[in-house]
Image 1 (tube, rainbow, N blue to C red):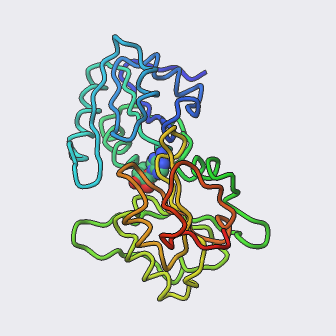
Image 2 (spheres, helix red, strand yellow):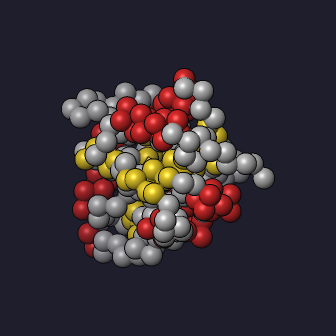
Length: 261
Ligand code: SAH
């Protein structure tokens, strides 16, 4: 077992929300930490595992509502470690996927602070589990792409659309809800068929989780009307064709659910 020394930092994956999906190592690190900096996406059930007398600091970021900028977060972590704390930086999902881990590790290393990673279950894995599907399919979906469709306010998405529009790929699009219209239009323009299966999954792994199955050309409609304001993942490709619906969804007569599904 790796020691959790004073003055060191662990970037810990909190998983998608369900505390049962936390690794045993993450749970141990949360018990041993003297201070925990956590994101907005960390589930309440996971936060409840932090001992009551451990200091916890919300550094939450939800798109459009940045409560602390990245440099401030880096500085807080460094300051706590230099003061001799055992620092956990708790992040939703896996800390190495769309979670600014590189910046935080660099900030630590510049100050000679030991920093290590405890992996977590990423949203795409949790969504597949909820839907009862495989993200890869022998001979049909040979490639799994984790991509973020988050762009700076007012800027167009700068993605390799031709590369993404691969009929043999499963796309797991993180932070994509706001950009759903652009994603749909650009993938279709790059040659992906409009009837490619798409499933949106909101709050994967949580009791309030829900999903919506649609097709690429109808994605903007589905993203705009079918979900709440929880974190949502967009899965695209043949692998999601047989998605099991979870939670409430838009009625089929709204035209969002193709008859074949
Ligand atoms: N490090 C995280 C991703 C952070 S980016 C991970 O590995 O999962 C934040 C995005 O992740 C959200 O906008 C959403 O697209 C996705 N996400 C995180 N938790 C989710 C959940 N429980 N259900 C669906 N999507 C989720």
